[in-house]
Image (tube, rainbow, N blue to C red; front, side):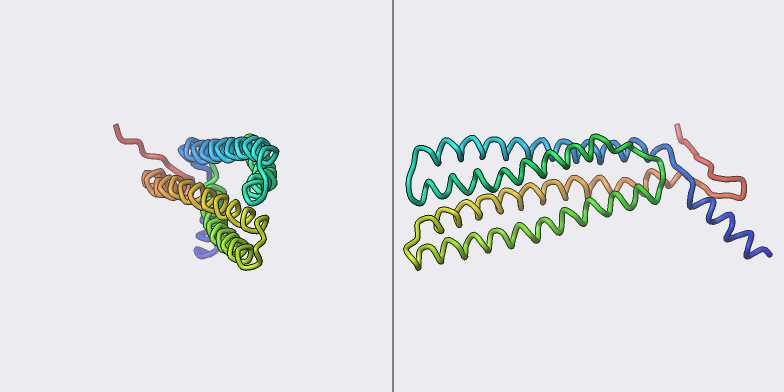
Length: 190
């Protein structure tokens, strides 16, 4: 009977909400929104630069600008969708949802960083193949993909750093929380 009571109260405790997590989650959301503004700004700048550059150049340089334009059309869509998702997110106070969201953004950024390395490797391959085949379009495309992959690698690394440091605040937020049969108690020190 005591074991059943323990597990029943433990389940209630795990489902409790912690008001200090609301501010923590708002900061995570703010980081995501600001990151999407940065990505979107990069995309728009590259699209404008790419459009102008492609219309005024030829050969390898034209291909470089074209790929910047194409690549950043996708970046702009990702930034728009990411900003929209962050803007509609409500900063919650549920501990497990907070942990899941924090781990999710960190994992996503690490996976993106691995993809960024793949992009740069693909760009190097395209550039090398273009040189070998005397194909200036491939060389230009390759240089663009290397540049875009390098930017995304730096972007994802900085975003990961911010989120990872921010995630280390969670233990401090819940250290003043105690669990009991009557519920969750918060202790504040002045």
